[in-house]
Length: 308
Image (cartoon, rainbow, N blue to C red; front, top):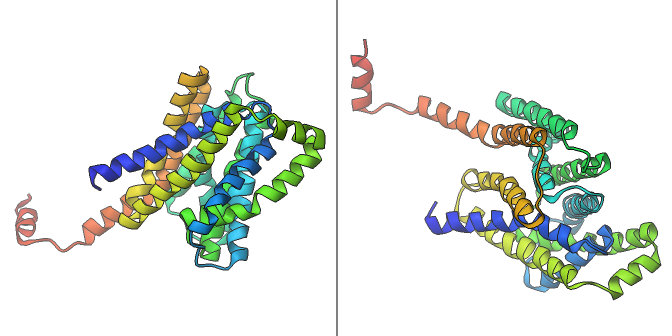
């Protein structure tokens, strides 16, 4: 991959990692579900300029219900309930582990042994994070964040099951299913008075956060990401997502002074190691098998023959 594309992928990871801190910053004074509705209302402004994915609209909306509405509705609520943004960026990566399990159950896919090892390691890491989260992290916030990861994983499996193309088109068109349901749900949960007051008194932080999450994290981020996937194999591009938790944790430390407990750091390291096995393990095995089955050249044959 050329250096400019490596830098572009790294830029996207920085945008996505910082995204957690920006969301937490803008949530002050705004109900979380209403805030998600505002974000995706801005995303929908790009609808006339982005081609619809080559799939039935109902399939696109079904994916959006899990990947956009469910994931971000739960994530924003988790942050509102006290989930630290750095820890949230880490726990959300559980989606890669859950995707393997859900795909095995729903799509009858057969994960490699290394992937099952990654699932086990990731779950152990999550358990360590839960036990060592410290008193500052409410259990309900952690559960909601795990729910966001499960919702994201469900969306991943739906993309495969329904054969919906990913990328920027899916991000924009799936947003159709987000604003109205979450706005209505916010009215029911928070009450018309709270929602009306929040809309009438949106702070500069809320507007800037919405602009960042909708324009930079969603449109610019997925726009660059989609181009990279068009130019390079997914196996070269996807591993960059492992940079999101370190960026998120670093941003939360620099901006908000967030410090993870030692147990949370250990659990997070185990979780990320599990994600590495799930993501990269099968590719490493495939390359080794391909290398073994590759016919040997004349010098290689001679070298093997000369071995004692």
